[in-house]
Image (cartoon, rainbow, N blue to C red):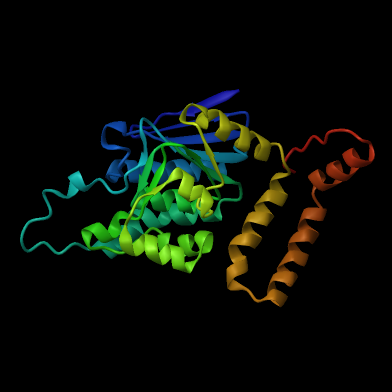
Length: 268
């Protein structure tokens, strides 16, 4: 059963426990303006609360994933004497959706259909998994306008590809094509452009069929592992395993294995 929610600048659907948020300003390469920023945060909150959504896919309409901030919105502001308050703007418009994605207790997949630049690149990095079209391109474009990579790019990128490569990409602002992104571990999979939707659906469908609580606990443990010592992580694993072991899905998984049948997980 498919459900849909009406927005102006994005599209949101849920089919077979897979929610999809599509950035939908293709005429400006899905650049973020005020309206899309507000709607995107609202959609993320809705997906996080919706128990029918077990996995979330984020993608873009048209030929781009997202080109980041809509610089056209800034034309009237950038006149001599203008001093932008970019820090406050980040805290209001962009940081909230990074926190929502990282804290969401379900997997989030970026289906990167084209260019992902600036905050659009940061959005792809913030997701748990990335599947890219052969036409995808990742650009930490900030340096080209005299800024630093934001929206958690400086946190996510070194963790995904290492400090040296992250330093080079952030300082140079050069584009990374899909094949290189796969080679350096920036994405999990690259597929032909025409196959991206099906490949993302296959990945999401597989995750949606797995035990939801175990996926949630796994995501949390991996996210927090960089901040803990080995002993602290072992303690966290013990607590999480105790929690997972009390779920109906764990009992179903073991029972199905013993009975030599396919398990039917319910997320409970």
